[in-house]
Each structure stands twice: as structure tokens, then as C-alpha cells.
Amino acid sequence: MTATVTSESVDPGEAAQPASARFPDGFVWGSATASYQIEGAAAEDGRGPSIWDTFSRTPGRVHAGHTGDVACDHYHRYRDDVAIMADLGLQAYRFSVAWPRIQPDGTGPVNTRGLDFYDRLTDELLSKGIDPVITLYHWDLPQALESRGGWASRETALAFADYAQIVYGRIGDRVRTWTTLNEPWCSAFLGYAAGVHAPGIQDPAATFRAVHHLLLGHGLATEALRAAGAQTIGITLNPDAVIPVDPTSPADLAAARIADGLHNRIFLDPLIKGAYPDDMRELMARFTPLDFISAGDEKQINQPIDVLGVNYYTPSYVSAKPGQPASPAAPGTEGIDFTKPAGPVTDMNWLIEPAALTLLLERLHNDYGVPLMITENGAAFPDGPAAGSDEVHDTRRIEYIDGHLRACLDAISHGVDLRGYFVWSLMDNFEWAEGYAKRFGVIHVDYATQERRPKDSALWYSDVIRRNGLG
Ligand code: FCB
Image (cartoon, rainbow, N blue to C red; front, top):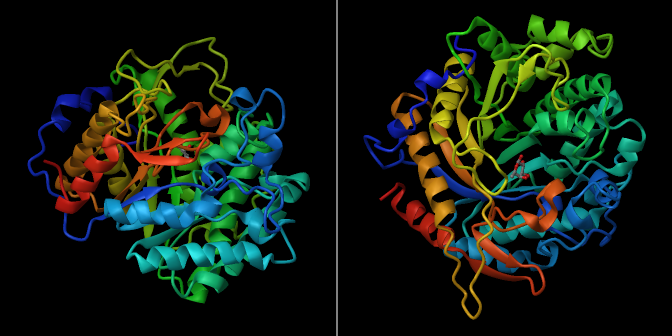
């Protein structure tokens, strides 16, 4: 079993010369967004507050005090946005449902006006031949649940399964593909360890409880959705391509193994193999009694899934460095350094390394054997229209996506079962702690006027879709 990607095998040149630039027939092409990042209408039609409303209103948490109150105003402009998607020829659209629109208090009464919105959006997509791909949880937890312990509490896992059934009950007759959670690593480790995402807590014990309750919520929801008749069910992770700086150094390899455990195996092993890895149980036990893992929980988490969503942006480099304090986002990583080598980066300062995606996909395929889908990949670059022009020449975004699509082709040519690709993001949006300062869209959004302008990358991507491949 290959636990990590080795820098020896990362050869960026390798990704530049694919044997074939065509994707398999039936490969799905889409784009992705998330509710809090684009919808706005934060206090409309009975929506309750989410942890991101609270967090973004807390001074110092989000760049320049930005909030999702208005965002891209997609709640009101969804018809126009779907029309743009149709113009681009998108086959599928991955969006998330805002739990606080459906159950403003997290549990109990259902707000039908919230369901109405997703019902309308689903019908609009279907009327244009675009397949809706639903994410049930993309980080906007009802604040009422956080106030009762959030993901650190078992109650939230149970509540999530109820909420999933409510949404399914309304649009399950038309939506084929269901994703339970988006990137539970971020919810747990950025939300409860580093505290840089909502709810902004720094508590390792709460972090590991959150990991478990997120996974349990996934398992309970998956079982319920399956019983209700859902066709395709998955979960989206952001598995890390962990690269030991010196693959010949046992200390670096050991460091990489821990980093891989905390980011990847702690989620993938219970999900797909039915048990937490022993080393991660030991690591968690350094911070908290494991009394939150009840008998039968790992079996409950280990529901068959039809697809594993993979969000990939950048790899991690790790090395052993005695005396290094633990990373705030990774309790238990004392003595491990996460410094990345110099290289081309995006506006997020994320290293651009497509070849690491190929190796990551191969590793997931070999170790876990499930069908894969790239549910997010893309890049932040600040390009906007020049004065008096509608054109946005975002060449670096095109290069980024092109490189990563070639990396996908490489993985496919090596036997990886990769079913589709969703570019992050359809349009510029609220980039969490970075507010509106980082632009990931293939559509440019002018936040003052809410005008949308397809960037060059959108037109290029449209061509890729049309020919099911790269030129
Ligand atoms: C992912 C998130 C997504 C977006 C991208 C840039 O971690 O799932 O919402 O913010 O990063």
C-alpha cells in the first residue's frame, strides 16, 4: 500500500504529454458552488442563521468584514445563472443546500419556503438539461445546532440524517446524485482546531469528536437516502497529496505517514474499510477519551458509496523537524514541518502541481477502490475586465485547469476509474475567511452591479466540454 506520494515520482513534465487528450465517453463535465458562498438572501424566506453568519460578523474573522449576506445574489438570480451554465454547455451543476433554509433551528419545524427554492432551482436546471448534483452540507451549519455543541455533539449527526431525508423527500424524485458532506476535514480541523473557519474554535478534543460525528452523520444519512431510493450517493473529501520532502529519509516518511493519517486515513479508512486506523486512534486518544465512538459506529459509517468526490488544489510537503510545534490545523504534528518548496502559486499562495493530482488519484484508486469524481478543482487569480471591456483574460486559470485535466487523463490512462470533473467555481464568490478578495470563478462577478461576465476560461472550458477533451 502506498501511503504517500513521493517527490521522486512527481514529474511535472510527465503530465504535459498525455497519450490521448480525449476523455472517456460519458465523462461528466460540470461546475461547482456552495450555498453560503453565492446565495445571499441571508435573512429571507425564513432562513435561520448559520455558523458562517455568526463567524463573518465576528470582527477580525473574515477579510475586511465581508459576509455572505448578499454574495452573488444567486437566490434571486438563479434563472440567469442557470442560463449562463446552459450557454456554456455544462452537463452537471454541483450546488449545496443551506440547512438553515430548510430547518432554521437545525432540528424540528421545516421551512417549506426554503425547500421551494431548491425545488425551483432543480426544475430550472433540468429544463436546460443540466444534471443537479446535490451537496447536503457545505459548511453552513444552523447556528442553533452549534450553540448545542455543533459537530462536537452526537446530536448534530442525528439531526443531519433527519435533514437529509427532508431534502430528499422534496426533490429526490428529480435529483439522481447526492453528496452528504463537503470536505469534513475542513469542518473539523479548520473549524475546531485551527479556528480559522466557523465556528472558530481551537480545541483538539472537539476536533476529533467533530471528525467522528461528521462521519457518523454521513453514515446515517447515506443509509436513510439509500432506503429512500437515492440512485447515486457519495461524499466529497479534500484528500491531501502528502509528499515527503526526502523520500529516502525514514523520519520524513514517518512524518508523511502521520500527516496522511490526519488528513486522509482518519476519514477514508472508516468510510471505506469500516475502522479507524490504529495509529489515528492512538493519536486521538492523546487529546480525548474515545468514549464518543460507540459500538457499531464504524459499521454505521462504512455504508457502501457509489462515488468518492475528490477536491484537489495543491499538495502538502512534509519533513521531520525536531522541535517544530504542531500545526494549528493538525493536532499531534509536533516535530513535523509543512513548508512547501518554491514554485508557481495561485492567488491563494497555493503551489501549483498537477502531477501530484495524478498520484493522488492513483493512490485513492489502489488503496480504496471506489469510483472517483473530481468535485472541485480550480484556481484563484485576480483578473478582471479592463475598463470599457467585457473580456477577462484569465490565462493562468486556463493553464491551471488544462494542467490538472491532463493530470486526470494520465490517471485514467493508468486505470483509475474517474467519472467526471467539476470546476471550482462557476463564478467568483465569498471565499470563506478570504471574503470576496479571492476570485475562483470562470465567470467574473462585479459585486457592485452583480453583472456576470464569462472569463476566457469559461469559453475555453465550454470548448473542452464540447469536444470531451483537450486540444
Ligand atoms: C474548498 C471549498 C470550496 C472553496 C474552495 C476554494 O476547500 O470546498 O468551498 O472555498 O476550497
